[in-house]
Amino acid sequence: MAIGAALAIGSGLISLYGNLKSAQANKRYNRYLSERQSDLDRWYNEEYNIPYLDTAQGQAALQSLRTYYGDAMKRLDQNSAIRGATDEAKIAGGERIQRNLADNLVRLAGYGTQYRDSIRREYQGLKANLDNLQQENLLRKSQNFTNLATNAANMMGGIAEAEGDF
Image (tube, rainbow, N blue to C red; front, top):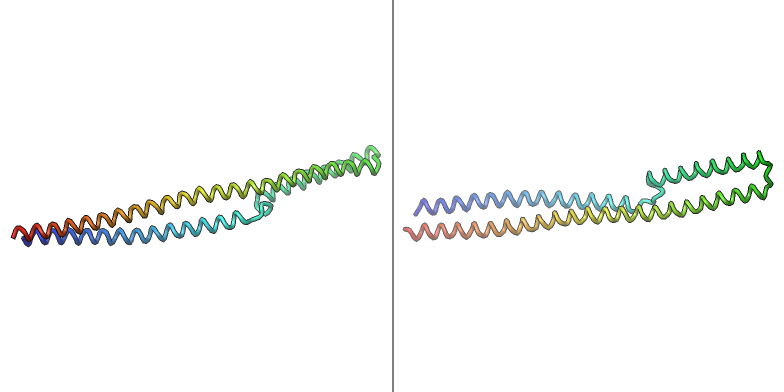
């Protein structure tokens, strides 16, 4: 009887120790997931709210447009001087270049919308992955609680069985 009860109690204590360590690991994992969520939210807020023209991509595109259209205006001036173009012809050529520049700037603004959409989609995907990890952790916690209850019932059953043998 005493041996059976001692084994049942020992088994119960080992189970409780395992559950305590599991709970500590769960707390660390919860902290980790919470930190990841904070990092993800911070990244999203920074990236989503930055104007596209302030990004490296936007700056590069804008610089490319400046260079291209600056060179186009210089070529227009040089060609106009060589051909002896009238002021009206120079203005017409400049207006054509300006319209093309305006069209490209509108297109560049559209890239800003695409950029924000891609940031939002990436955030949603990363957030969904993080949500899945949190759900898996909750499932493990519930399984750990079930294991604790089962082990406690088994311990009580072992003690009762040992007492019954006496």
